[in-house]
Length: 83
Image (cartoon, rainbow, N blue to C red; front, side):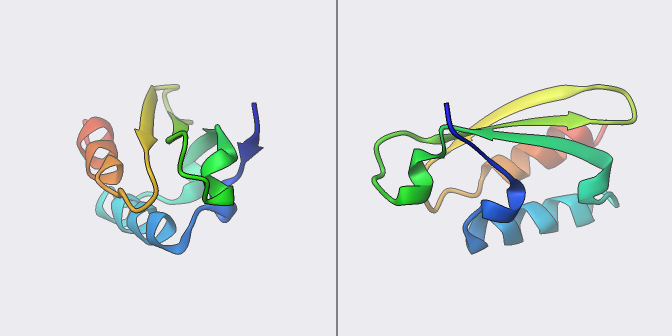
């Protein structure tokens, strides 16, 4: 399984993630991100990307998946980590 860092996210995903973290008043350093199934990076569009997000302060973990161009997962991230 390929892994990528958040630096490898397409610009629309990165902008959406940055906006979500800003809404939470947090930064990338407050989380651990693991992106799997990096085949979407090659634009073959076969498999959605999966990202695991862990908040370092308390170890809370959430999993998200998204296809190319879908950024609604970041809205779920805000909702899930707001508490």
